[in-house]
Each structure stands twice: as structure tokens, then as C-alpha cells.
Image (cartoon, rainbow over all chains, first blue to last red):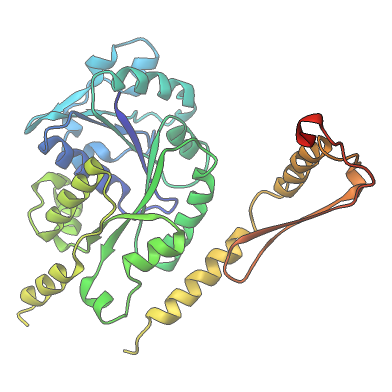
Length: 259
Length: 81
């Protein structure tokens, strides 16, 4: 059976979709069969981030309406044969997909894949509960900003109500230079404040900002942050809660600045 | 720029503790009801005999206090042996 992992946050714009896509990519690169599910129905973006938006023929609603089988709706990434996507619908009629519908689809996918990664919508409404309902592990993505950590804390309180085997946290957009100067909360302190295991740290990346604003295809990422995601995938695979070495990034930032 | 981390951590702690107060309102009632049902197996009590309260301490931990007054215990045979 697959590990069904929901990537959530509470606050929008913290990097859930990017983390979902990069985790899927790196796990597939390590030899795992991975399917990414965009459950942000109506406001989906995973297809753009993954660069597969032009290949969508069927979506999750088509499966539920009997227009296609699950296999027909899946999109295999052209450069990563073990990575698949199940696209969300563009329709604004988001009430069509229930938690039970999603669970049924995930039960089927679990037979074929090693990992089912659910990209959860922002917020804590029905869409959030629909996404979490079918998962057996949760990863909360936050940034080192007070409001993002606060929302992560609120989401954590809700996640405790579900039967999840593991809840961990990823701190995204960390500036190693600022953490070293104690101008920014450290990922370790954030995880400790939230009372969660720190699964990984992703550093601030100009390349991600640029890729997401221009091309959309995040898989061409090749800066130090790509190594952060690789380490994150390793941590998930090994259930190892060891954050990346921040010192490496301090040096990286200094090198880029020519210090 | 001065070091912000300690101030930030203190502020984060304060915000997270404050948010804990907004947990479901009915939670205390449900918890008290479950405690009552459990204690009823061991004591002769009514709902009025139980005083319970859920608070948050300065460290952000939930503290559940329960005071029970009863006249008679239900001593089961198995506990006597």
C-alpha cells in the first residue's frame, strides 16, 4: 500500500505546491512510483508548476462522472517515467468531489504507487478536510514568518483530530544568512514551538521565484535548493527527521555575494 | 540591525498560546461528560458532584483539573482480591 501524504499549511503562498511537486520529482528520481494529486479543485496550479498543463485530457471530476477510468486521467511526466499526476478540474463547481470520492480514488491509486502526494488547498474549510480525510501522513509547510507559523499551529490542532500516523513540518524560504545573524527564526525553533518533528528546511531561492513567475516548470531547478528537496525526499523515504545543514547554505549565500 | 530572534520567539510563543484559547468551545463539556461516565463506574456520583476545568498554563500546556465529591465508592470484587 502507498504512503498517502497530504501537504498542507493553512496559509496560502508558503510553497505547498512547489514542495509537493519537488518531493514527487525527487522521490521518483530515487526509484519510487509517485502520483501527485491536485486537490485544490477549481484553483489548481500543480499542473502549471509541473509543466504538464497542456497534456490534460481528463480530470478528477471526469473520473467521478464515469467519463474515464483513473488510469486514463493520469499523466506521466515526459522526463520522469515514475512520476504521475492526477489533474484537478478547472470547473468552479467544487462541491462535486467529496472526501469519500477522493478516498475511493486514493484506494485505487495505492495499489499501483508507492507514494500518493496530495497538494492541499490553503485554508481550513471543507476543501482542507476533504484533502486530509484520505491521508495517513501530513506535512505542514510553513515559512519563518510569524503569521505563517501561527496558521501552521492552527492547522496542527485540526490535524490532531485525524488518524494520522505522522505529522511533521517543513520550513520553506529560510535565509541561512539571516538565521546565522539571529534576524530570523530558525527552523529548529519553529518546529519546537509547534511541537513537531522538523522534516526539512528549504532555503530561499531566487531561481524558484524566477521559474514560478516565468516558465512554471519547477523541475529544471538546479541551485542549492534542489539539494534541499533531494534531502527532504531522503528524509521522507527513511522517515528521518533531520534538517539540512544550514551551514552549507550560509557559505553558499556568501559565495554568491562574493564575500 | 539588532538581534530579533529572542523577541520573535517570545512573540511566536505568545501568539501560539493565545490561539489555543480558541479551541472548540464544547470541548470542555464533552471531556467532563466522558470523565463523569468513567468515574460513574467507580463512584456513586451525579453530574453536580464533579467540578472540572481546562486551562492553559504559561508554557502553553493544557491543564485539566477535576474535583470530585462522593459519598460511596463502588468497590468491585476483583479489586478486593
